[in-house]
Amino acid sequence: MSTTIEVGESSSRKIAKEKTPLIGAPKRGGGWKKGVAIMDFILRLGAIAAALGAAATMSMADQTLPFFTQFLQFEASYDNFSAFQFFVISMAFVGGYLVLSLPFSIVTIIRPHAVGPRLFLIILDMVFLTLATASAAAAAAIVYLAHNGDQDSNWLAICNQFTDFCQQTSGAVISAFVSVVLLLFLVIMTAVALRSH
Image (cartoon, rainbow, N blue to C red; front, side):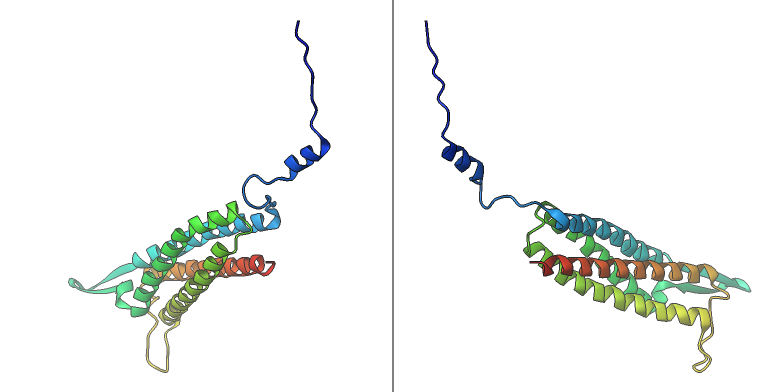
C-alpha cells in the first residue's frame, strides 16, 4: 500500500513565480497606442489607393479632337505638360513609399510602445507629404488654367473642347489632395503617439 504526501508551495515562492517575467521586461498593454497604430495602418491603405489612383488617372488622361481631316488633329495628353509629368512620377513615388511603409506600420501594431518605427515613419511621412503637396499644387494650377484660361497672358481655356481630358485631370488632382490630407493625419497621429513617450 502506498501513501501519498502532498507538499504545498510556500507563499513567497508563488509570488516570485507570478512576478517573474518570461523574457525581458514585463508585458505592457497596448492601450490607446495600439488603436492609433491600427488607425495608422488603415489610413495608409486609403492613402495608397488615393495616390496610386491619382497617378494612374493622370497617366491615362488623353483626348484627341479631329480637325477637318484625319491628318490634322488636336491632342491633349498628360505628357504635353511638364507639371503633369511631375505629378505622375511623384504620386507614383508616394504610392510606392506608402506600400513599403506598411510593414513598419504593422510593427507599430504589434509593438505599440516602440519608438524607432514611429520615428522612422514620421520623418519619411513628412518628406512624402511635402512631395505630394507640391505635385498636387502644381497640377492644380495647370488644371485651373485649362478650365479658366488667363486673359492677361492670352491663354485660352481648353476644357470647352477637351472635356474628357479635363475631367480626368481634375479627378486625379482631387485624388492627390485626398492622399495629402490622409498623409497629414498620419503625421499628426504619429506625433501624438510619440509625444506621450
